[in-house]
Length: 339
Image (cartoon, rainbow, N blue to C red; front, side, top):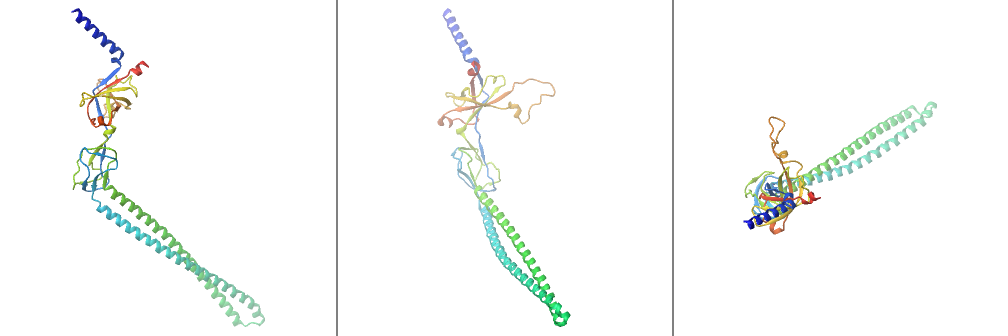
């Protein structure tokens, strides 16, 4: 009996020493689950599925094709946009040719206006020279009338040619404005072609990141709308842990503290990790229906704070760690406590 009592006393003393030096600094919870930032593969355009390139649980790399939609309607739109571009380019060339013609017509009108101006000046000079002679009888009245008539005709001709210059300038300005309009239409058609090419490219749904394919629901012949979930890509290589500790447990927790993980699915494997970060609020704050404690009777409920933990595991072990698995988590807070 004394021997058993001694053994029990030694065991209790050992446990007490371990608890005093280690155990009281270990914060543990089984409310912890592995997670990964999965990405849903969904099309940006509508169409019938013509091919599925992957199967469930397959590894894929970023950019790998997953699903193909029927691209014919989008290719037809691209061809139509290309035809519109060709037509707009032809319009630009035609208007530019019209501008050259209008510039030549303007130059001709200006030359005619200058000729009419010179004729008017000559007719006015002839009239001015002969007017004094008519008063002395050296020139006849008929001659003076002819000179006045020539002067008036020159004025009329100058007015007509000046109006022709203004009309040519207006036509040239209109043609230049038309060039700007057709160039804008050309740019619009080019933008439509780029959009059509994007639509054609988007008929192939690609993986947004490295990972494994899961939750596949797509079938050949299915009509897919933009945003329809076809499958999910899970980045198992970037898996992490979220442990929901009670608010009374996080007082001594700090980022960088070591963590021991026991995955329920792998009972014989001990995994290590480190505390990475803390949620900016308790889980209740981000619930769909947050609690409202300002009304009615109040019952205090201990809140839980999500803590993100980095999992230290090699590639082979990560293949066995799946999002959603339950984990028992133990955080060693001795470094902070002793500090």
